[in-house]
Length: 202
Image (cartoon, rainbow, N blue to C red; front, side):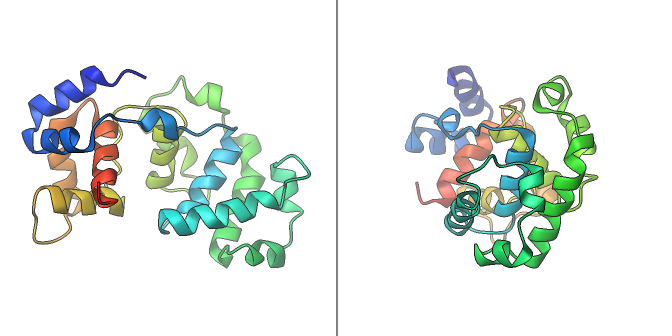
């Protein structure tokens, strides 16, 4: 993907973020895009909730290994015992979320149908599944549907990045994060990606 126009716009609208962009370098968000169907994408996002990237990745890898010899599907997950799922590091709460997703996914639009909808409609469509909130759907919007104007105000990495870049005394609340993000429209996804890089020490 060509992010040149997005980066030029962000530099012009927010010079502070512009300095971060210059320091970090080219945006490689396209290299982090996910593949797979909606069930795969949402189950991945559930596993990653409220965990560090390293911890979530390790659990997700072990989780997928459970289905190495079969197709990963709602049916396969529902047939997997709680004990087995606990064994790869999943909490009881996340197991209940994954099971609810597996049961309800049949009534949820597929990726191709979601691509025709606007961001807020997608959020409202998917958050009726237990354990899927705005953040989870926003990760789908960013990493699977390639939407360029998503600002996950609940994301700790984004908020921590803002605190460091703008030298705030405390983590910004949702209102402050949203207000700062106004300057990044219509490329708030790209801005978020750079804030994540700051949080990683880039």
